[in-house]
Length: 263
Image (cartoon, rainbow, N blue to C red; front, side, top):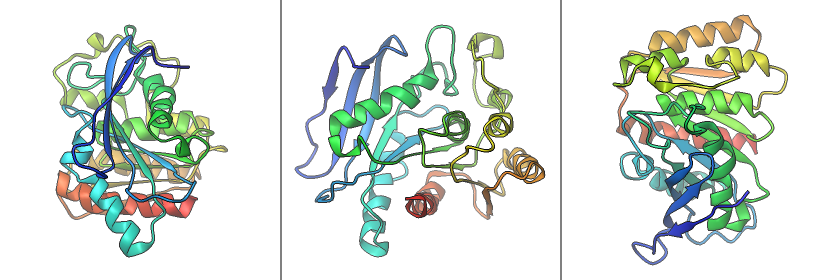
């Protein structure tokens, strides 16, 4: 697979490690944007890739400029000896209020994440090519991370999600578009639990958490109960915070620690 065109931004400041890219996506049949971060001064040949998926109404810049994801990586490298990790932060394809990272009739938002984003990351830094890949997301992005991670267990070494949607039907309270307008052509289950049950014997380590004030709390609790009943190992936490970007800044660190343990 290769991109017909790929454009990279010049660095905003020398050595800041941030690159923005616009690629011509075959999966989406149009251009799409990704933000990348490579910690400055990385000398090791090992560079695991962490894909961060945003929620509804957001885009590729959300994790950088609302959660400060790159600053969390830098802090943990200094304070906790986190191995340097590359961040890839794609847009969801910018369909409606949120694509759900699903296969629509007009574009494959799943393959965009699973196949094309890692390929673009290699164009930014070749060292991530043969290293472990992880996936994480917030809300709709958490749904994408859990579902795509479960459906592609050989492609990801670990999965994490924050205050996640657990089934596409829950999108209806968050987006303007109707279920019919999504025009899905998915052949795989839409519910996270069904995807995990399908590949229960092959799942990579995964964790998810939810704020106790989040409207999605009961859905996350139900997923936790279903996983326990099915005997599927996982980590689940409830957090005494509202779902907001400062919460993400704090608990992205939990995700990165979890991914470190998966290496």
